[in-house]
Length: 84
Ligand SMILES: [Zn+2]
Image 1 (cartoon, rainbow, N blue to C red):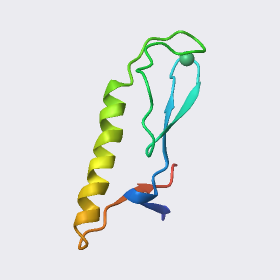
Image 2 (image 1 turned 30 degrees about the vertical axis):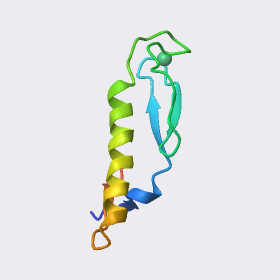
Image 3 (image 1 turned 45 degrees about the horizontal axis):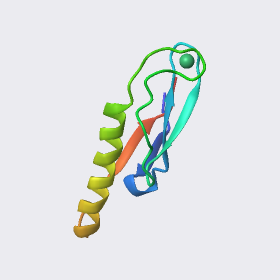
């Protein structure tokens, strides 16, 4: 069976979607503007979590974009497969 492959250039990423496993509450974290604070508790169900590592991931994406802007010979894309 052939699966569809989705290709996203790193410069096209607008948001990260973060979902609370307990209640399904979803947040969109923008890549281009910094998100303030460090949510410790789900605003809906009060499940505890930290966004600290996700913030680091967002900052890594920003740093990668800067590196790629300075290096015209590289394109970075993320490939994902269609879900079964
Ligand atoms: Zn929740």
